[in-house]
Image (tube, rainbow, N blue to C red; front, top):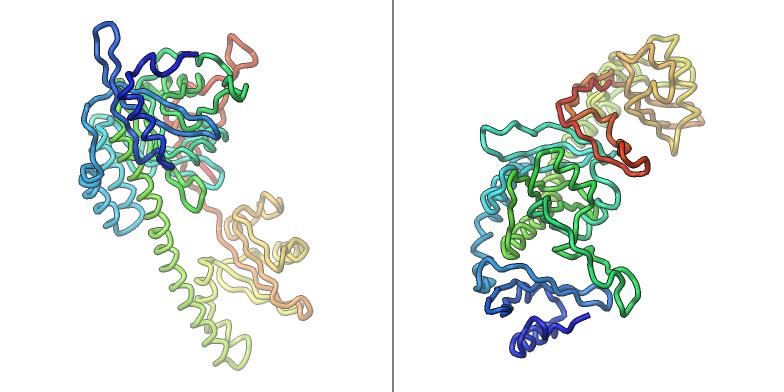
Length: 421
């Protein structure tokens, strides 16, 4: 309920007001201000942002009284950005980024955490002291990062928690007197942290953390996750440099993944050309199948294929036996969606496929002509892979023993190995 003049003299207030004339407040942050109280002078970084009609002013104790110029900022990140952009592929891009971020910030451990289609995360790059246990290759269940947190990562590029043992302080008043609504602190640097997330970090043994979002095509691709085992504060300038690195890497992700896709598309185009050549130079179907059977399989990286011409059935490579194949074909015809059907786990939707999972765990079917009853089916055998989880993914959320309506984060991060078929 107090005026800002309680903290700052007239000269500093005028400095603050002149900064507010800028449409984009990011270009003036941080503003160096000092408070003289009880004979003591304290220097602050003043960080401004607007949310709807509200201006939010946050004060962090300054680590330096000098304003970093645009040129200083440019020189501090230029070499890092050049190194990241020189990466040959996605793997080296990820590894270079974690090494550079750790060099700039001094965090104990820096990782890149990539999300899959089901929002589980995997550590795909890591930089740490040799004596630390590696997290590289570990998987974390989607429930570790709730949906509301993912939304915040999309709008807020960077989040720093300098010390999980901080004491939260309530806002006064709880509701904004102008709007009579709680203040939206989505973009606030000093916003408090969810108690469940604090507990999660405690269970991991982490005291300070920082996350930088990696965004591709307006979706959360992953995070640069930084951990420290002692409290760690980074000033605004260092955070701005890290946020910029996250944005540069997000752009590089698109080009690196597009390059990898492009190389694969070229390879497919070459195979398709060979198939068309075989078709144009063959006199009959039997000759065609002999000529192009390997290309037919390579086109979709399959081990087996079946071509159906009316009642005739031609098999290439490893396929289910004729008895099982006949029923499967009928089932597939009834389950085509827009002339196509595909699955990476056939037995889940067609239980009878359990009998021939060694040849047809994955299936792709295409309808060429429903009138002439021409279909092509490709098959892939079952793959059994080992997934290393940081803790049992089946025990992801627990109810607090002291309060039946409070969720508690999982406590175990011991290696838990799962065989996925």
